[in-house]
Amino acid sequence: MSSMPNTAPDGQPDPTGEEVILGVDTHKDAHVAAVTTPLGVQVASASFPTTAAGYRDLLAWARGFGDLRRAGVEGTGSFGAGLARYLRDQRLTVIEVNRPDRAARRRHGKTDTVDAMAAALAVLSGRAAATAKTADGPVEMLRMFRLARASAVKSRTQAVNQLKAVIVTAATTLRDTLTGLSNTALIRHCAALPDTAPTDVATATVYTLRRLAQRIQTLTAEERELQRQITAVLNSNAPQLLHRHGIGPDSASALLITAGDNPDRMHSQASFAALCGVNPIEASSGKTRRRRLNRGGDRRANAALYRIALTRSRGDQRTQDYLDRRSSQGLTRREAMRCLKRYIAREIYHLLRQLDPIDPTPRTA
Image 1: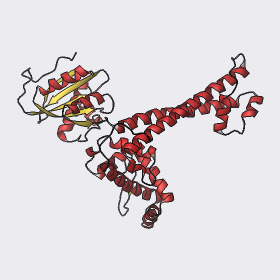
Image 2 (image 1 turned 90 degrees about the vertical axis):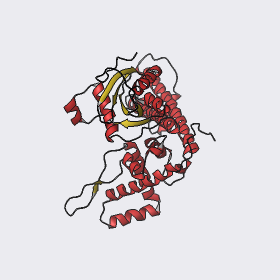
Image 3 (image 1 turned 60 degrees about the vertical axis):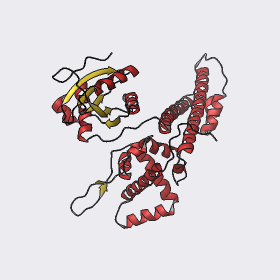
Image 4 (image 1 turned 45 degrees about the vertical axis):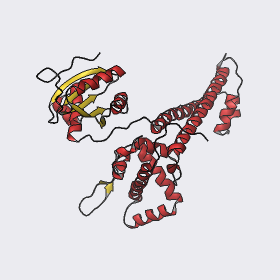
């Protein structure tokens, strides 16, 4: 059940037709909503459960105060994802709102109602203007596949390290039979060790090596299957990216996730560059004219652009000529690579704008 709303001084919602702005501070079990007028005056606030009925009640409550068209929602990629989807389905413009800045929190304190009001004011003032990702198509599928694959890769690496650590302390006879083998041969050999009940240190070592090797094989198969799913989604929805030099499935999926299922939310190639953290940041002083590293943006997308730039710098003559020209202009190699990443971001942006309408079902070969 929703809590009793805190309304304006007259005590009752009054749908006058005047535009109102909704702000929501999202949490796992309940969302706190606040409504403000175009002049920034708080009209009301209330708490609603994170259920389908709670979403309906929240929207009906907010619409009772006027013409509701825009909503600022915190955490549209986590706790606010469900609410953001519902509001979009109801034809509202959902704006992604970052947490209030620390200076504002020092001045006004921290409560859920204050945060919800801050979200509404961020939309009203224009400080928050980025349309939230829809997260309802193949890009969201890619994000999930990458999440699971990263977990499998991490667990596999951990298991390999554990297996090698066990070998270091194993009996000399067993250790000698495993020394010098490649990782693939080592794992295959350990997985085929006798499946005997552990009764002492020697048999416990064999038992542990067998279990770890089998776990590694399972995780390897899982990682490969997830990689096949990622490639299938990319081939179905963004083959243009994979056809470009230096762009593989990992880099392509990272860049698509940054753009989202609705890349039209980016109004220019400069906005995509900012999302990737490759837009130039001036660091000039006196007679020195230079730009420094942008430490903002999505660092996974930034790393993907760096991998593309690095690959092209080694195997693409046009890229090599560009880097040589920038170096002759006085830029360091690092600064030239930053410029190259910015140009690659522009190229990727135009490719994203050319993508076919979203098809959430990957086609298999």
